[in-house]
Image (tube, rainbow, N blue to C red):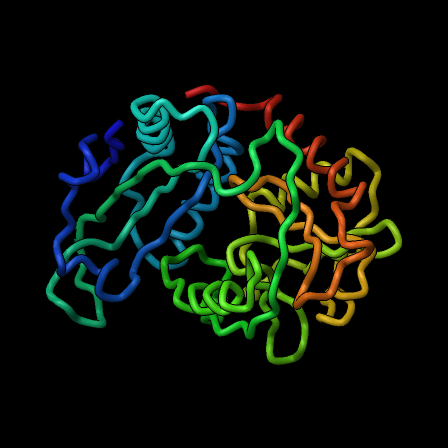
Length: 286
């Protein structure tokens, strides 16, 4: 099956999609994006993703190229045309095409494209085997709360983690505190409470993170909202990551050090089940 992608108003085979070399997204990473999970043929937390998309566009001054309903139509058509029941959905908006200059000219038409991919983690109805992490220095730019395509810091961190034999990077700031994963949010569990780093410019406001906090409230599970160190994460009773198409997954080890007993934590698996039940209850079918 040839994957069908979306580019500037057209649905077409991926090998026919072309973007000019003068696109500012290519030259400067002057672009934002969203990554969404597809579950049971619907888009998980799509309204939250659209809200974050609009916020990111506003923060970098890119005009909204479509209404929310138009974006939803594009996304759902991608899911339909690629016959995705469970997987990953990517949406990308650049400032547009212009002669290379650090200062963008006014009136550019944003470039918009999107595509689907296979699931990144364990399927929803399969118990996850867990993953390992490797601590890496957080080298990203300071506005990590804006979901831009300026991802070289994450690329280097996850590459370093892979070279260390781990599945995912755990980013550590110069002050020794943990920020988040290279492509996921991260939560240690200490004495039955989740350590949750507060939202700020230091981390991405993860959509799955947001929904997990809803689950914690509904389940009556306490949180400890503060910064914390790598040593505290290593000493946790269990730990988990969240992501758009990985849902909630256990962390078995960090830097080769087992977390808890080195197996999937009971609380993590309970929260995964509760998270999936919640998002399934409000899916918007494609």
